[in-house]
Length: 457
Image 1 (tube, helix red, strand yellow):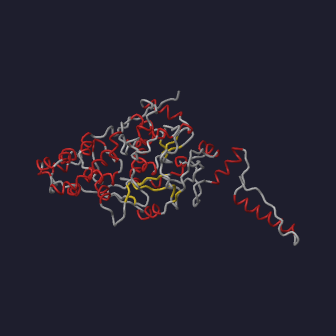
Image 2: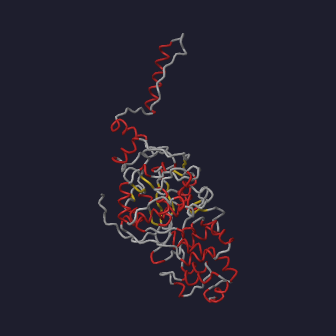
């Protein structure tokens, strides 16, 4: 029996607001299509039954330095590809969104509301529920006409944008007490109106804010989880339900949030924070569904050219992301990953939302390194487990290519596994020497003679 520590009672979103669900159901098919183009399957989060005990337990396993969940003999982290898997929000070939500060006056004007004192009560943001919920049909808009600064036609056009702000502010980027950050309006705006003709994606921001919330809660800097805990919960449960065959996969349903319950119906979930903590403490890599059954076969994003990780632009700051540490989630065998100090990339924007190095980040994002997705599941190399136990906090030399820290692998192999290692450089030197000796022995009558060595294992 593992000793269960005192787990902080982190607060979080505990359900899909009923009024928001009603609002969604009252949209016309064309309005739902317009929203789905920007939010993908996120409106389906109302089908997720929140488990706050599960998220509280998972937070205890978050590794602040390496931006992954660390368990007994493996690491795990949400990836861009898995966020796309659930939300159906595309990110390839699209730019990251840069949030901007938004005054209350501009916030109201953009959403068609009058700049009145009672509507500027942004501390509680009650206007979204007392005003926007009134705007679900023409009769109510006419009844509360004094609160709107736009015509009925203009309001009808603004309804999908207003819903997007409400959903993002209450479920995806939530704040405590139902507060909604006014900068979310700038995010919703670029989703409906491209910037300089460039299409932008919400996926990196969703992932960045989940990471940010995990970090703040683990450090004890926050008592409320400001990331999308519903999406994190769905992601985690999908990894802990191993599919013995493909018969329990619903191929006809491309909405993986909607079909999530069908795929995981056989998983017996722990009950309560203590049970979850004990379960996660004893969990091993062979119990994990590493690669999602219907994960896209497009090459996943692994690292930037200049660094061993990827910088994500969140709603409130930059967040590092290191998928090179979880290659098994892409159906590949896990190697000892290249590592760097990622703390320098965990930066808060501050009140003015100043995104430093935004051009550099966008350039790296547009020239990101990928790898072919494997058929998996594949196990890690033997050296990986030694490294995970004894040397995972070390850093790799700068300027290395690829995804594997070959130097550490070679160092571990003879000293811990009792095998001899021949590096590619050593092999090239030996091959050159043997070729020279063969030519010297052969002389003019035997120019075809040669000697060869077996390639390094």
